[in-house]
Image (tube, rainbow, N blue to C red; front, side):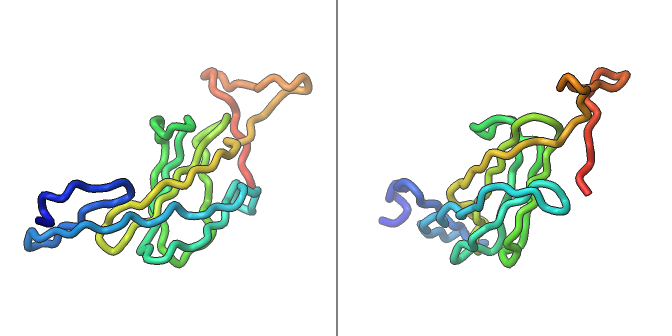
Length: 139
């Protein structure tokens, strides 16, 4: 029967309010451009995924995505994703298409540079009185 069938790779289960369920394929990973510096900081262009109602974006400090520092949702008609860094250093964006059932599809990931910091003429990062790097703002 349908309810005893195990899920295969790249499948999910959509459950309706009345409790019925169906196995559905997960949406493909979005295609992302290389990060580029825009007027508001780093950004990437997204090639829309057929069947996506929205996209979930997570910003992490590690390539595995376990140290998430930001998460936000963008509408399916938005094709530019702002890559919002939380500070200096390497950051990683993880983007998933979300379907009509609210199921997230496969991950696309993209490394990008964090916020610029104030540095001395020797290249040493300048720290505030609290020991934190002084971040520069993109305009």
